[in-house]
Length: 279
Image 1 (cartoon, one colour):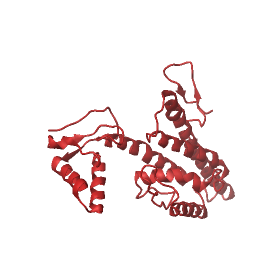
Image 2 (cartoon, one colour; image 1 turned 90 degrees about the vertical axis):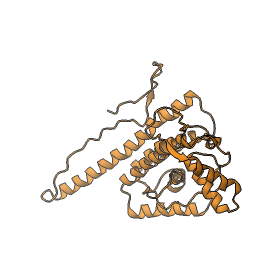
Image 3 (cartoon, rainbow, N blue to C red; image 1 turned 135 degrees about the vertical axis):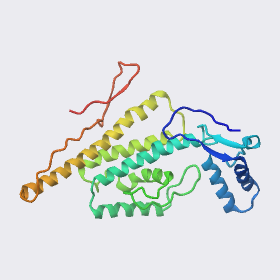
Image 4 (cartoon, one colour; image 1 turned 180 degrees about the horizontal axis):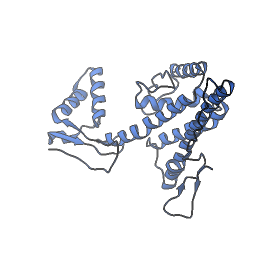
């Protein structure tokens, strides 16, 4: 028997099969084993499959094959799909955009080493902890790569960024400071709003994921635009110094799809958030 709960469309939503015997075996380990390490590993596997290790799922008593999930609160039995959407559609995606923006800045090697050293030192202090588990976050080593990072590591890095770069980002070129700080602040708001700490009304959600989304990506677009302009200026400088050896670079006009400060059209009851084109 297969149990499947349709919950709407999502690019990242998928179901996975688990056998009754495997799930029951993991529950038996969690509830009966005296080996703490084995219990922890079984609990983590149950969570990855979408089951709560604290509340035994009774579907395994009547179903040979389970094809789950439905989204919900983290204490619900079937919560993996909602978690998967937030993990892939928000945490991993947003961190990747910030990481790519930092790479596009072409910071000097000394600055990159300084920032990575600060990040590692903050992690080694063990001053910041997960509010739900009480555990200190794993030490992160670099701001400029996403290799071997879990979704939890990415979220941790995004919240450590203000401590690493400072409230004025003085280690960065002046043109990058305001858009970088703007993007980081809104990124943190996005993650906080999806953690289930409290309920949000419609106006707040429109402010966060409507206006805030446009502001955040407008700031990232500004960083990319400045990076393209800097590259063009360097190539043009080399061309002017030695035209015979260096060809004249072609001017590439990057299309900015977002403005950092969008405006709201209160005359329409359907579409409140509009993007103001940049002249």
